[in-house]
Length: 306
Image (cartoon, rainbow, N blue to C red; front, side):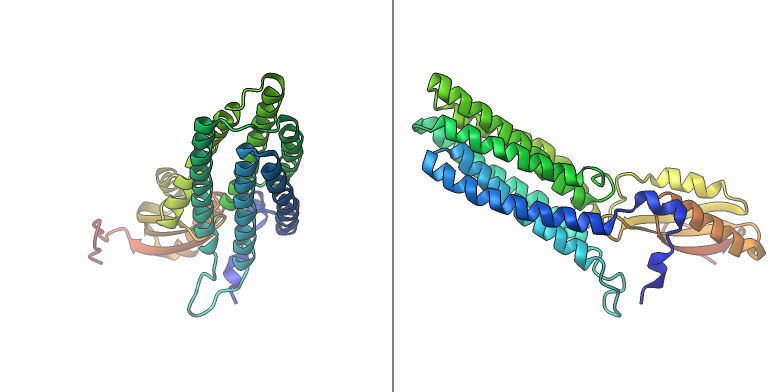
């Protein structure tokens, strides 16, 4: 059993997400969006609107990403084993990476179909498009709102929020194109809106993709600075030097650190260690492994001669 996972004391709770609320948010998001995808796709076929069909395709990618995120969220709660000493927490990072890729694949589909629409300029049913997309604005807006308060605490929640916020924008675009088609009969607007939507999604996905790739490669998490952490540790009594710092993400919400700490007085180490751990927890680093060195030890970048 992984007892040390639960040593996040009261001063650490502002980084944590409410698991029960988030679970409900994911389930409601999946139910609402699955129902809407089906309705939107059927109406899109009937109304001959690539705007609606591509939006349904994009919404389907959202449902897939919500299901993946929920699975990762559940799997991350599984206790560690002898083979998987951190449990399956890393799964949350890989899922956020997969989600970013899913979004970009959906964009490719939308771009291809939109260009085809611009070239062929097919007749489209404007009124039906507007009404359906207006329902989409409401459903996507509600789902985005479910994830809003936790979006900065977890990369998967941020991914879900971005998917939904982008979708709400997409649906607003489709409402506008439907109204323009009704008023002017300018059918090519359907393809133009599709391209604008694609650009918005790409723009909103780039950060998620960059963050996911960095965490998957064990890079330092976005809101943590190695320099700042080093300076903070150096200010603690009895610490003479700190080096060999490595900071990485175990999951989208938990971070780990290893470091070599050079100290003045070995007899005070227990107290010093307690202070360092307390400081690290305040900076959302809940797992740390510290190696001590006496003040006369000489440690180079690659090896230590002590």
